[in-house]
Image 1: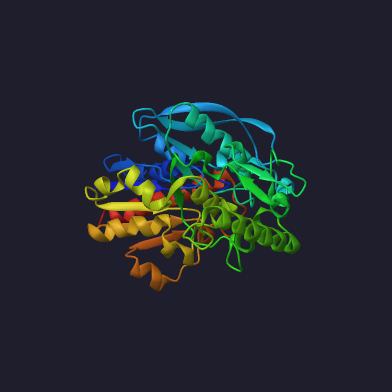
Image 2 (image 1 turned 30 degrees about the vertical axis):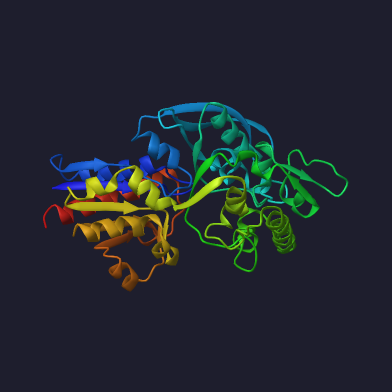
Length: 374
């Protein structure tokens, strides 16, 4: 029997590598004769670089940048010199994972560090960037990123905001150099379709999880609406309600104004990049999973993408997640053969990396015992 294990990370607990390794350890306790292929994967957010690096031969580039609170850090991105393409994970410079919970305040955070990484890649010859934008700590509409790339934002006193943060959105009255990086092609790996502003926009939808108070949310939303009007007037284009505009605190809209940008589904991009299709067609069983499977899963998330392939090739699909709230009927419509939730077998004990590994090993063994016989 040939099994493909291709799982995403369990956020704040285990990497994609560790999730898959733990399941495989359980499988191997049943039999060493089972043929298992392991391809760690991500959905275009945190962990995307690690997944790509384990599969493709790309140059790892270290560079100095700034974290969301503009503190110096060293980060990393991947560079494909042959195709002049850089792979940049926003979370590596502007991510929530870089902040303590008490530091999360999107009025004070900036995407400037992400812009520094893009500039470093361009200085090394990249003319195309794949930008993975999941896990951001910012709601600055990308003004930090743009400032790092030479776009100038002025306040009412004609001062240039050199390192703009979220709270500066309502201070901007003029923008210069919008076309400074129009020669850069950008693939924006994104799994949300929120508009830039409004009740379903970047601030109202994602601001609270980044530390925004109700007043902050309103302030940021108004700032994005005001700044978008300036861009609309300057460029004659309006991306406020384009697919992905509200992603990563509005950085989606900024990428559309500043670069030659194409929005791609993050999960689909990763599935194609790692050639999951080529592996699914050869195996008998696919095991996939991520931290949570909910109603958003059917809107283009990773598990939905994997399920399309298993339906295409008529393969069995087992899903292993930390939490499952998606109705069973919806799971059946996706072609999921069986699904397991760690929360249902853990007796609601606190999750730690070690306890989660043990649960995954237990499930790996259970799955192998069941499907290696059938």
